[in-house]
Length: 383
Image (cartoon, rainbow, N blue to C red; front, top):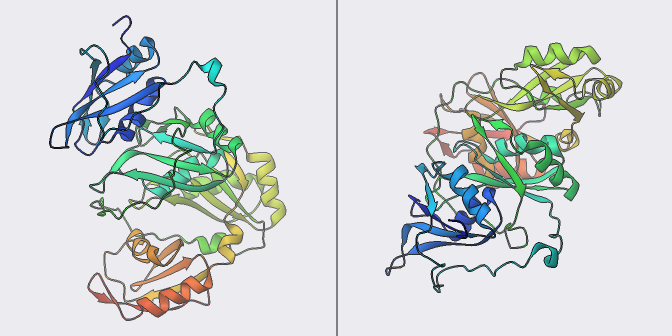
């Protein structure tokens, strides 16, 4: 295919759109347009054609993307044997051919990045924790299909363009959950990408290993400035290992590895020292120190003040077998849930973004039934 810039992409799931196809194939090179083939009934045929800017990009797509998994299917990428791109159809989204890069000039910088090749179980919170070492994050969202399942990719919006660039330079190619992830600029940033996501069915939960037992309340219970964030931790690091490593800077009062809903480490944690000066010492001396060959990110914890300003509720009569993620999902419609601590005796302490949100949870959830149990919800003044 010396001069053929088009590739055929087959074995796609029926829910894949033009935008999905564009994002899926863009790691191989610059795309002019990406179109799903539709039948006369308006439904996808499960395949599409992608036109690249150069024949070399098309060849790269066949060599690097053929056989990768998307939406649970191994896609087929080969030369497009139909000469010329298919005629445009009204239902298709057409991309205007791109001018030569020199004439076009540099792309407008964006503070959003696209993160691809994620495992299907990665949540918004996982993505946030994974990408936070590069800079301050405004929001991190996994993309979902119409069936409620993850598309294996997401968008992260940083506070600055510099943070987004840092994410691309430092996090692309890192392995997470057995996959080498792709991080690049979000090419859809100019569109209304942040529009509200449509309601979707919740995917079936994975089996979780154990209730959450540690408490971020302990992490933020000291003087302001006494807590640090530690990122890029190996998955094998537990609280004892984190405590031992960080003790080189001072007296550790509390060390916690942040974990996903299934109990696995998110690769980051928080450490509270006995005094702000020790936290500053940790940032100065332990940033870039290594555990198991990985350089750590040690910085001030940007959630500390938010956590101190939050409101807490105590939930009693929680059903046996309920996990912290279950409660977090149940309370999300009321506002941001900062942390859930599963306590003994069927109780849970939940920290919400502010006192007003906490009071709304008390007013509307007290006496309601969750997982077959009538909940007792009160303000928690001790947290």
